[in-house]
Image (tube, rainbow, N blue to C red):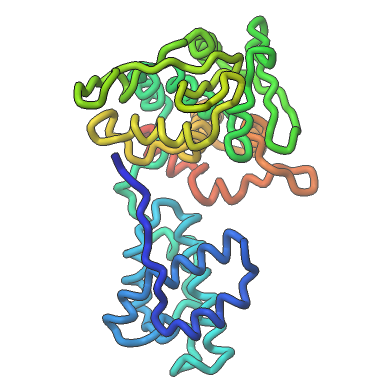
Length: 334
C-alpha cells in the first residue's frame, strides 16, 4: 500500500530559515507549506553549497521539478512561496545579487511547466463508474459515488454525518450537515440512492476488497449497527452509535487504490470531488460548446463552494482543471 512520505525538515542555514518562518503566521497552512519546502530543498542546498535564496534560475527550476506537483494550483503555491522567501532574503541583504530570477516569469504557463502530467488525479465519469463497480463493499462504493456527486464537507463531515433519517428516497434528496452544523439539500442520482440503500443494509465488510489472505485471519468483519450510511467496523471499544471518522475514508480509498487492487494511487477524496466537478463542466461543454457562468453556478451549488459578494469563487478551479483543455484530455474529446 502506498504510504505518505515523511520529509526530513532539517534546514540548511537553519538560522535564516527560522528567521523567515517567524515572519509567517504560525499554525496556518501557508506556514506548513513554507516549512515543508524549506526542509525539502536542503539536499539541493547542500549539493550546491548555498542557500535557496542564492539559487540561479536553473537551480530553482530543478527544485520545482523535484517537487513533482500534479496540479497547477500546487505548482503555483510552491513557486510563490519560494519567491516570497527570496524576496525576504533580498530585503535582509542576504542574496548575493538583488535580482530575483522569478519576478518576471511567474505566470500560469510557467507554473504549468512543472506539473507531472503522468499522475492521473482527475477521473472521467466512466472511470469512476468502473471503480465503483469493482468495489466489493457497498460501504466503499457509496463513499466514492457520494463524493463524486457533491457530498463532502469540512473533514468529510457532510459524508460522515449522513444518516437514514436525512434521506428522502422518494425524491433522491439528501439533507447534508457540515462540521459547523450548517445544512443543505443535495439531489443525487438513482444510482447513488441505490448504493446508499445497499450501504445502509450492509452488515459485514469484506476486507481488502474481497481479496482473502490466509495469513491475515478472517476475510470479513462485522460493521457497527447504526443508521449512518458510512459505518465503521467493530473493533476494540468502538460503540455502535459512533459515526465513522475521516481516516476510515482515507484508509479505504488507499486500499482500493493500491497497485495490487485497482491501481489508482491518486484515488483521494479531493480528486474524486474534482472529478465530479469536471463531469458537470463536461456535460455543459458537450451541450453548449462552452462552460460559462451557469456551469460554474451549478458546480458551486452542488459542491458547496464558498461565495464572495454573492458569487461562487470558481475561478481558481477554472485555472486549475475546470477548463476545456482538461475536459478534452480526461474525456478524450478531439
